[in-house]
Length: 234
Image (cartoon, rainbow, N blue to C red; front, side):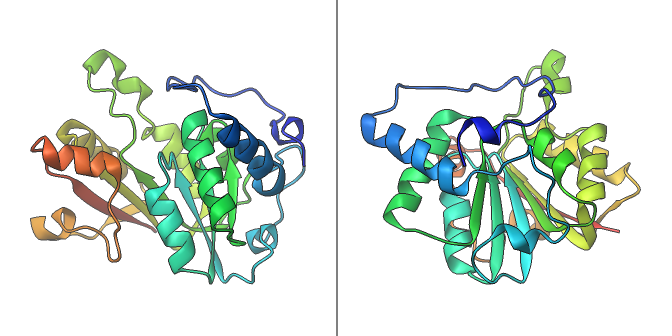
């Protein structure tokens, strides 16, 4: 699969995050090209109705992580749960290069990658095809005039509701209070999602098997307390 073939048919919605950081080293460039060639998703073709067909491994269910950053959580989950298939989305070139380099060192057959706007992938996926969606430490867009750029919004929650199976989980983690409150309000206002937490300890306790991320480590160093929210697809 060529890098050209991975380009989706429709144009991306407004995307406000960075695409590139520091120039890649030659080894990273090679790993990125090779990794997307073998693991990149081709949205020019119809998605299989059973997403397990995307993987060479025999998997029982499929999960999606949007904006995996440095890939700490996604790599941990993919290696720890070989019975699950994982799709990782990261439009930031340096993050994707780091992931593909890691997978070159430790090949895994239960992961696929997408390096464009996540909304393109969400619209490509079949209805009720995912067991879980993870969105961890997304760009908080802290200035009020930029809140409309946050990934959690009514349109994207509609997308989540369409592709999640009944009982599927949407998990959200952030250290930014305004974004945590924003997500709670949006999800509780959406008829497809239920928040089952009954006490603060439930959303201040990391998820089971949580490996942490570099963003979280930075937040803790700077005195911010992360929140870990879980919403169920009704």
